[in-house]
Image (cartoon, helix red, strand yellow):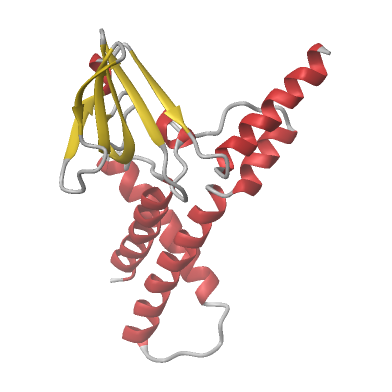
Length: 199
């Protein structure tokens, strides 16, 4: 029974952490069980330092829910600006994220995207994107399709239509941030740092 609770608690922790940090869960069952067992054991050892008990069932439930909450908060911290600033301070251009799109996303403010296919350009607001991919399908809202400078389709005012585009087949993708975007602060800091090095 204790081993099962270790695994359930550890698995809940790891699953929540991966969900918040947008990391793929491992498909290796042995790796999942071992990680869950270790994390669950640590959670239970930390909980055993609390002298009060509400009964075995409530204790197990409380430990599992606490592990989920802690994993959520840890995930938010790992995705926070503090970590990125620490990387920038240490001159590390690698964020630790497996997928590039997770680095360039600003979920706090709307972003525009241009996707090019030959002479066609699709321009619209990024409504969503496929997780766990460096060449995801992207979903655009309020989009316009142009060929050179001619508008082929204008859905910029249509609030009932979305378009899904496969970036793997595109020639290039441009992301346009609003001036207030936190990513713009990172770009400015990066450019200023490069100017100091070259200047």
